[in-house]
Length: 289
Image (cartoon, rainbow, N blue to C red):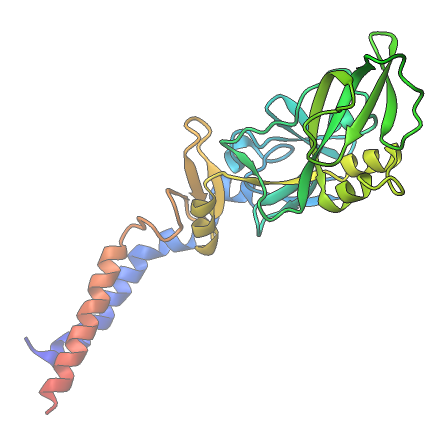
């Protein structure tokens, strides 16, 4: 094979290949890429992106179970039939801070239930400085009538049109003790520093309790996190197939399965041409001797 002929022909081959490749690289009008490149804002929470969707972002821009409902500039997220206010979103650590909406303005909710998560999508953040506190409702004493609230961890709730004595514990106690019985109790995660202050009589109060609950707790999401990291590194935007919920990587040219670099038409041809160029460069160098 004539090395001079190959050196003269190679630029022409490269030009033809690049012209073939040009449409896939130059297309900047993929509709899903354009749609999902627009995050939405709700109140003070801005730049809301994958896995969340809602507002101007369709479900294909996010992941099922992560719909944000913006009501009066307040972002709400429904987890296991419980409405949570979204206080913070950290895309780097893939965590968010949420607070139970039913306890936002009162510590005497209409329905009593524990804080629960959909563990296929969320988990309590291991890096968070949070712990559970226990709220007891409808409590009684077998030794006589209950005293009016005189301790900082006591509060009254109106349950079924009757005044109910209630209290909270910020420590890992097994129950109310001292002959007390309660009809219900619920667990609510709060910041560990606030829980410590709630356990000290000098700083404990129902106002501090409400503030601690409103401050929320951290949870971590799981929505094809590793796939999304790879897609983002390749310049794509994360999303999901609206019909199958399978992960999708939206790129400027089209939708890819995992990253903008995978399955690009002609990549094999490009590699062949560049390998051919390197091979003939080496051959030409040897022939020069």
